Amino acid sequence: MITVNINQKTYHVDADPDTPLLWVLRDHIGLVGTKFGCGVAQCGACVVHLDGEAVRSCVTKLRRAEGKKVVTIEGLSPANNHPLQKAWLELDVSQCGYCQAGQIMSAAVLLKANKNPTDQDINDAMAGNICRCGTYLRIREAIHLAAQLQKKEGSGK
Image (cartoon, rainbow, N blue to C red):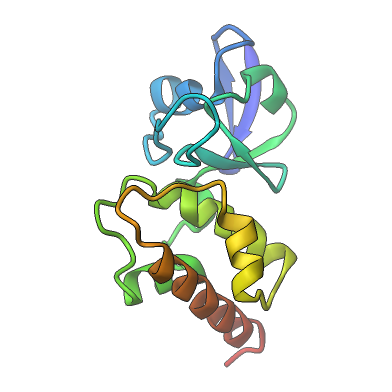
């Protein structure tokens, strides 16, 4: 039995410690927002936060999450009002939507570290996230918008 904190809730998981975190989230906990894309940490569809770091849950073993805080797309904002979620909706970023949870989770780590990213900062931070529909320009625009929204919310406006 391994104890993990996922989206501020404690779970006791009866799984092999070498089980990929992705399958624990989806199959044991029932959080299906995190997607399986490639299984080899190349596409970014499975990105979650592990103690604030963006990790590929398809290759992150359950044992690594023990005693740490995991945040999935479902836990990014309980009311779905994170600046990135607002920006994604406002700019209609998603096409098929499959990669978008991973995109948003990667972008959230970027915006936490860099409140005013340049296009190059965004390109660098998001380079490991693949969008088969090619919505990269809308994704970048949404990250810029989310940075602006984050500033407004932080200033009380």
